Image (cartoon, each protein chain N blue to C red):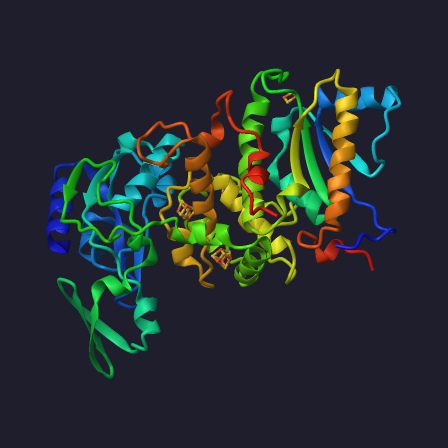
Length: 146
Length: 324
Ligand code: SF4
Ligand code: SF4
Ligand code: SF4
Ligand code: FES
């Protein structure tokens, strides 16, 4: 796919409050750069992520959606991310079954101390999404501009 | 068998086991069979024949708060899974239901008769595997197995998973079919082919909500699709991702609880193969978290509300290949 130089990917990153959001903070305060097109949405725990949120993000024009949470075993609520892990696996598999590229969805575990990992993850994800190009399969006509 | 059933229910009512029965009665046409709750006086309306496809389990939910004693429920082998699942979810109280496990030899799909050009159907006689269909234009004979409901062709087996007593004979109808056939076929397609397949199917949806309303797993007190603030409560714009949204969300909500009863596909007026969505979840669950059948026993904890520390990472979807 030819990459339009004008086009920049829109990425939504759902980050759990206790680890990954703090990780993002650390990346920021350590002046590590990651793409400005990554829009972070803070959630209380990775398992707060209702699958509908992901679909809605895509529908409203996101090109990629990533969920970041505490490492398995480190969830602030003990087990939230274990549940999230199963749910996301099943959801991603379903999306792929419907013909949606599974590279557009991702889960990464990022702790509060892992500022560099956060930045690297976002850079890598943004690169993947840029290569994949604009997401046309999941758009919503009503949300299209003009 | 219908006679035997009615007599037995009457005897049970006389004994004071229950005052009402959940069964089927005839609708407008003889092949229209609808769920019905009948009292002793209405018992003669009860039917049990080859058109009793509808799964009754869900109708027990609304009866629960009204009950003082018990209600008798007629449960086919496939429906017994749904019944158990509803008990597990505390929507139905096992103690309040007297379950008669009714035998099943597969139920007939009138649409399949129509698809063979048989119209003006006035009556059907059954003799073993041979159906004699009487129509306005003469009689036709059909092999019974060829016009069974799709769900009967992939029946999970004729064993009642729950019952207080059993009446009637059952017969295997699945003939060793692999219910994951189509799922595997779809998985083997390219992503673009799958996308087009589902866009083609799902864009036929008129959002009548019949699939949700009939589904025993879809028994939430407040359904997300009734909430006007979600923006997914009615028909989507054509050629739009929202056409898929309802289906993905509904399939996801019932993942792990779907017993593969096949009701959703049976009632869809647009003929959308909805069971292929649910079966994909079942196939994935079996594959990734170990084989699981919802509704096998009361009190199971299903895999989507469970975990192990060793579970695979979501990246497994990418790694399995053919996902792009
Ligand atoms: S989703 Fe379909 S097959 Fe599954 S329980 Fe509901 S009606 Fe039955
Ligand atoms: S679609 Fe979801 S919220 Fe609605 S009844 Fe089914 S499971 Fe419940
Ligand atoms: S029954 Fe069929 S047409 Fe009706 S909402 Fe469900 S999928 Fe759509
Ligand atoms: S609190 Fe971070 S994943 Fe649960």
